[in-house]
Length: 101
Image (cartoon, rainbow, N blue to C red; front, side, top):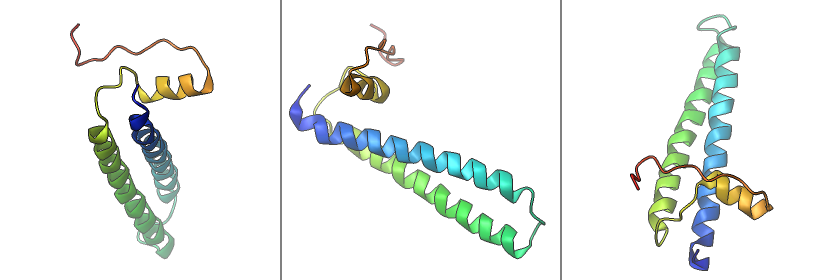
């Protein structure tokens, strides 16, 4: 791997982690909102927060796309396998679904 790609790999992992956290927070908020009286002030507050977090998801996804585009070449591993390797874990590489060979 090119050392020049390390910052973009780190950025991809960080953005992916943030995206997953935001999705989990949206799920938590939506579950709670469903228990609130419809159209109550708290219901609307929660709906606003869900919308803000959903916008974050789109921003993280766009940042991931940009970081992936900024890599100098295909990395030959996934975000998870790169993270495992950085921690010293030995893992099985995922097959690349769009790579027939």
